[in-house]
Length: 352
Image (cartoon, rainbow, N blue to C red; front, side, top):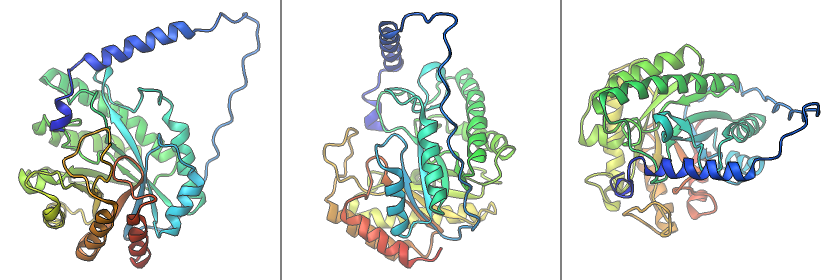
């Protein structure tokens, strides 16, 4: 976030995007249709496949991003063959125009629902459970958080309206799990208004809990528990998702496994004290793409990535309630890399 912030000029990106989209829309506007012309037939509603009835005991998730171009049937079948029991759908959250949260609605991906429904239905068709989660958008042209007290109040109200709709969506399509934020304390969420997180956790949970019957989770970065030692009230949530990366404060690749261990132990103490008995290592890994669009300090080879997963499973699989690993997702995906085989070997050896 610190690197990303250096690229941002607040307000500039959204002004340019809005102006460009208005210009393009005007140039492409079709001629007026005759008044008595028959309206085009609506596309049929996507088929609904009910979710599997079994309950997950140990989470073995692979994460997918709806705006990635992949064959849902083929890749979900591959995920299942690797031993996954959960398909995680990452919805990139942004808040550019009017300070209202939305799912990635710029740069030509405004219609996220059909693609997400396709992935959900395919997972259910193949007897796999689904988790919906909102993640930080991997880009540098969005605004960092709300600034003033008035903005914070308005943004929280807008956020509650947004999550009402998303909770209805999760309920309608049978998602077994719904992680409200994978990193509540990220700067693009509430990381620069940490004092308001206690209200965020309570208010959004109440909105979602009234509409959604599955498990509700909330996520934090390792920084919150290891470096800042913040004591939030997450009572009522069903599980905690923790993220940890080699670029975290006071961390390097050699210390990374210890960072994860320290994070998991601290989060378990936090969660158990609030009657939350499920902690998932939900967002982690290393970048192997030196040409990635977002700069990271740590870039490793694919073999180093595979070795990292091997060591993490050896050291941590007995102190966590599961993992969710990027597959068709941004930056840390293991698809087609040596780490894919490592993950598959371990997932097939771990119980459901």
